Picture (cartoon, rainbow, N blue to C red):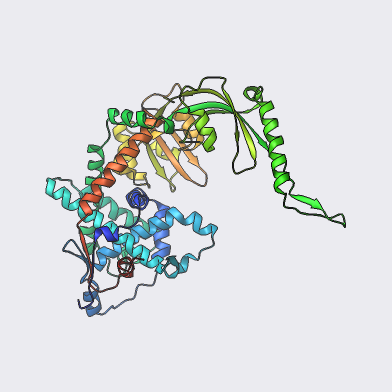
Length: 480
């Protein structure tokens, strides 16, 4: 321990809330075939037989300390594997767009002097701090949760994937979680993670904002959530960008200030003439809000000004796009359309209708749907018994939303839908839930409350790099 680095958690958890939420979302990807396949690609390597006893002993020695608790390399690598795979799964589309070589991702630069390897170390450390803080708080509260069933399910899933890849279970553990991974070493780690996530879910339930709190927040932020109906015409100034040279060729041209001014004056004149007809000629916008639309600053100010009434019009300069906007206000309101809730089985390996037929052949109850969900779901939905609330237009496949929101829909209705290139879905309809604006505000308030609570829990946690192997800690301490 001659080379020892320490820092408080406030220094290590430098990522913003979006990264914290990404870590929370990792639990939802726990059973995804895509998720495990990414992990397999990342960690696939030949298992070296006959590793020396002294090396195994060294690797199983304390690697870091968090709040005085020893963390083995096996435990660290477990969380690192999940965080890395989750991050790559969420960002694989963007990586492919930029042509990043996934086989050498760890050595590539993430930010400044930090490589992706350093960043994955940081994610793992943050996840460990969060897990330990949740565990400690839960135990201090006397919270109890039986992890037996979920642990057995996790191990069974890994064994199934090992069989599919025609690998020995013991070797597969090492391919996923590193050379120190054994079931004996990982059992307390996995169970602790399940326990911590369960307590986190309890906190979220306990901290769920009341309807009164949601409505109070809305009253202070109406401009963010109210919808508007309006018509709009965009008049672009005819500013010359090309000209003809002496040889008769068209070439690029930079307009003079006088030409730009003259073009803008003409555009304004045309815009003023359109005031009288914008309500009938303009493009119609229905149920537009800050949550689903982009508003030019001047347009937003016009539409949301107190006292605005139907038929009001305005002409405003479309800075910086060299033109004018002509708008006609129709109405402003709060969209009270309810969202939907359903229990959902998500899978990529089994036909949706096959699953639904199996359910129908049994008790065909909501309870039996939850049971069959535990058998087939691959998206970690078991955590909430597959219940998804706040489903709105645009948040799911259009055909699925049309089915959910159909006027005749009633509790207990079911649907099977295979979405090519995405996943297979089996749905059990539960009922209507809060309007979208309430769901969004409640989510915002809950996120803020959880963020504040978790920061308080983790604030004084000390992290010790026992072997000086975590480069990101030194970079943070240097102000990188």
